[in-house]
Image 1 (cartoon, rainbow, N blue to C red):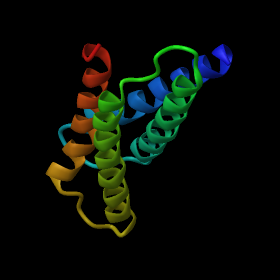
Image 2 (image 1 turned 90 degrees about the horizontal axis):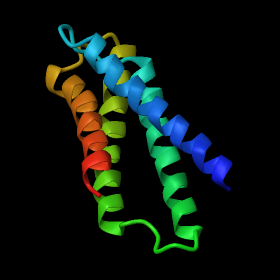
Image 3 (image 1 turned 180 degrees about the vertical axis):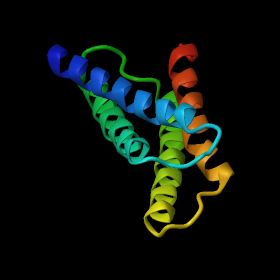
Length: 117
């Protein structure tokens, strides 16, 4: 179980890196890249699996309020990334606010994970 948890944490961090890295790389000309979309899905799926593993453990389990906040932020990131990718595929401009929402909200989610103990 511990190895599975470590693999999920590794993939979770890679997902965050894809979102925030893509955001920073395209900061001057904001858009939503395919890797940001993949990262958003990776973050959501691995996050849910990590919460499931933590709930199955012998300890006190995860902080459900923190999990709910992070899930809400993750859903905003996924929806914004989906809308942004759809606009890119339809050769439409991605609104700057939407593109910055994907990266900025993922950045906030990382901060919540680190600083909310």
